[in-house]
Figure (cartoon, protein in one colour):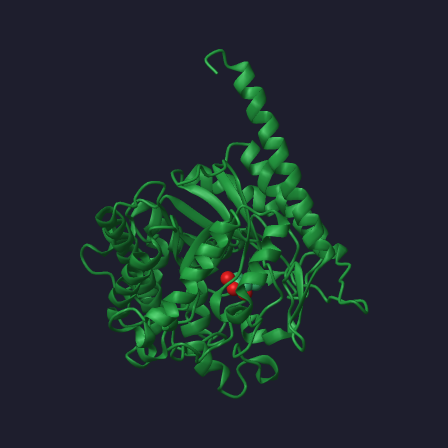
Length: 467
Ligand code: FCB
């Protein structure tokens, strides 16, 4: 394998958000196909049926990526393409697409970074109970083994899950995402089974790599969306509110993965509220096996205060708006919180290499007559966050890479095509791709940072007598 640079610069996407071709080559429906077909779920009734048509335009998309000069591309596999209905052998026709994608990337000197699950659960598995059903974790490990068998000779970077918070909370508790259930008990069961699935899949990948002689350079991990929660004041009520939110958003994932235990304050409270984490003996050691990489998706942070007590028994908290810029998602732009987050992670959860596996912003883009978007706002967002991430690295966080979300405008889940996160514009009528000003900025920044690393590497080599 080629030697990997010390710091990786990349872009990220996910299968359902860009591929389209939802019923080609043996792909079966995922929970997102079903959800989109349900009236009232997605803005304007939009779906991922065509999306960016990446399934048919993959080589040109990778050529475009190569022009940006990135080291690495983070993409996800559609489970219902690789293993339709989440059962049985791999589907050769579906796998062939990812085979070509990986080869195309390597031919362009771009490292392929696979995410196994970016939310497109085969509908058949949801029909069997979905993530609240423990068996789904075992099905996930089986799928991971199939995917690794097919691609592991060329792919060494494997992320099991993207943002289990979204799968559990938005999918099963608030119902904002597929499968659209609203059941707290099911949601916390889903959370535990997602983490168990992560552990089992990580084992399956490592076992497969050992058996097939492709362990060299293997990096296995998971991606979490972590969101700092700052207390609105030093009052005991606000401190407790922020601690609870931090527990539900961050610690309930970080603690089992990196310390082998759920945070007691949260687990006890969930039990009391009738939504226990269904942990069985041995689960936590599966979940907490060492990870090489922990991916952090960072977009924003929030200030939390205690809210006046409400009817139900859940701790009542509220978000306090700050007077800062907001993106089109109405998310506050808070780059400095990213520096603090990475330093906290290094301090409280040392061990893995950290990667920013997603960071970016939606703005109200206004294309000119050629489709060009002069998105100074997105450029500023990226600059501030890259600066903030590198500051944490310089102050000791073991940060090894950064991925811009997203390469393209794409299907933004329940917002449909109404929110644009791309550094490359996609005209959904013609499928024309046009790099925005932010893409030019990113390409230029990546080139400069790589040059700087090279020079400082050289200096170090000259400084050290032994070379
Ligand atoms: C993250 C998702 C990604 C995208 C961004 C904006 O939560 O992982 O697919 O939707 O948010």
